[in-house]
Image (cartoon, rainbow, N blue to C red; front, side, top):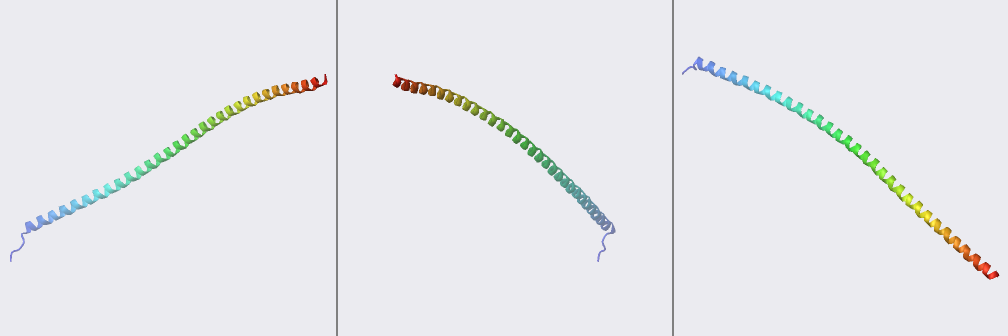
Length: 116
């Protein structure tokens, strides 16, 4: 029966230790990479939330601006409609006064004409 060569055995142990050491190093690097990836994901989520918050704020500001503009437009239209209504009402009033005067004149002529 042959005995293992001690130099080969210590050489094999050395290789196994080196492999085990390399495996521990790789596991450490993997753990660090996973931690860094988790940190990057958290940072990206914080940035995304900040961007969404700014976008919501901007949308609210734009909606408020649009609301103010719409209210101003509505007020301008209302004023135009009221001005036109006043003008029309004044024209109708003047026309009614003129017709009333003509009617009174007609009645006076008819009445006075019948008296003479």
